[in-house]
Image (tube, rainbow, N blue to C red; front, side, top):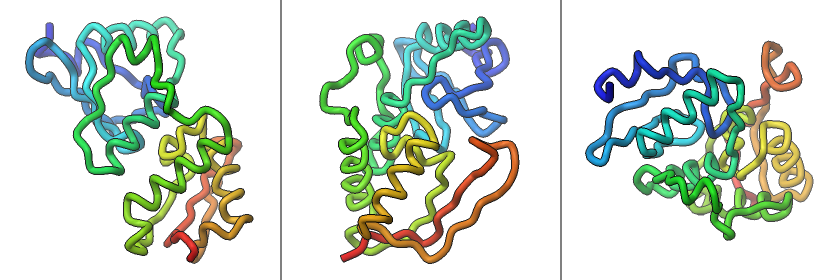
Amino acid sequence: MFGDLDTSFPLHTCPLTGLALNGRASFQPNAMPPSVLYTFEPIGRAVMGLELYLLFSANEQRGWLQPRPDLAGACRAAKERGLGPYIITESVIKEPDNSWPRTFDEKLLHFLRLFYESGGKERKKRTINVLEDFPMAFAQDAEEFHRILEALLDEALLRYDKSSRVQGDWVNGIQAWYHEVLLTP
């Protein structure tokens, strides 16, 4: 059963972000006790027990899957800081970390700090995809993340060289990209 993880119990939606996986994620068996290494670009990497993976899969099949942007944010923060995979346990699911940002302002400040720590202080430019990068701010979704970015741009804390919007099947019909984003002095 454990060796057939990918084919026997597939997930089609990220249980943390709610984004469609579309073959872009991997679920690999990971050591003992039985666990799963979950890799998906918007969150980075996470390790969860096999039972938790099966619960996510069963909830998705029943239409009960509720995204967990707080866990997605914790995973993405670990990725941005160059840490190993974030370990998702049942206790973390039941009792989220009190230090995680919850309000709009806390999320904005968290994103700014994470951006600074993950290359901003060295003036490394990066592209931000609003739809896929929203976990960087612990945002509920791309819409909230877009408001966070707009606030930072309005306050002149971030700048970018250009943006692009692609019409299509995205949040509110638009996917926004900000290219060559930098912190301002």
